[in-house]
Length: 179
Image (cartoon, rainbow, N blue to C red; front, side, top):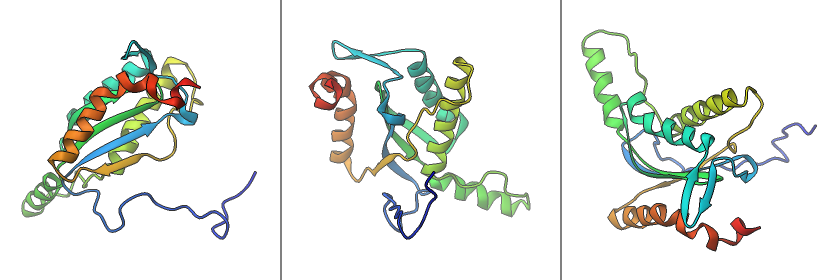
């Protein structure tokens, strides 16, 4: 087994340096399955057909704004080997709550949430439920990291929404999906 050696293994963050991911913003996120295994269903005639694992991903994502009041969800799509979503975070929610609790001399109960804590919690919940279905603790559902893009303007948002809507229909056109 190879141990981590910082002189050899240079991990580079793909995050925007200096950006506060707990701030209010719109994000486009992509989470991929471990080894890009197609465990969430299949695409048939340009439509995504979710299996039980895919339905878990969908249901957990729909629970996100109920669990985390500082988050809203926009369009999302579950694909056979990945998940795309537009998520809106409201960092001001946390600051307002913090100020109110301090003024009431109440201990802070809800800490600010970052995009990474949202993704981590979502991935953990999905993994736990999928492992319950297969009665195992060893299925690695997700790759270690995730892709994020800060949505900068209306044109960017429109492009990403179109991409999500058309993702299943374009599945068969992607060479990587036909291997």
